[in-house]
Image (cartoon, rainbow, N blue to C red; front, side, top):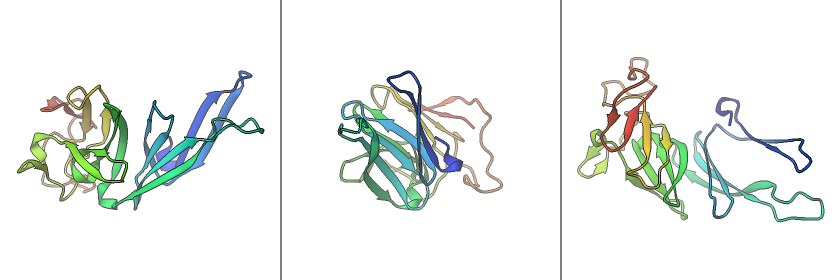
Length: 185
């Protein structure tokens, strides 16, 4: 993935041993997840509107292009969601909803359900979704949410949010937040 170049790359080796490279221009691809059960590849596109693009393998044909991934489905989300990383956790697709300060479980109907958020973002049992306070970017997927790790630019809510000139992220290595979140730049 080359997010700033708006390009998704696929690099492999053909049956003859030669490099097999293909690409797809996309608006700011930032997260990729593979469903090992279906072979579908889902890509998060983090520009307004946010999108999840699902690529599916083309059925085999006479031209020998079996398994070529083609766009199969797109789901749109509000820009304030700011989807970033994707991962399958417990056979369910999850995404960092950066603009909403939580990790969301994505349903097949296109809805997002908050699945995890740092304790500092808790607001009466739900995440504070009014604006991006942490820059919760990445997922290191485990077998469950409890076994997974998430990274953010800060471990605390600051006066100035991410994107502001005065936003001051934590040092590159910070202690683990309760619930499996670590801060990283």
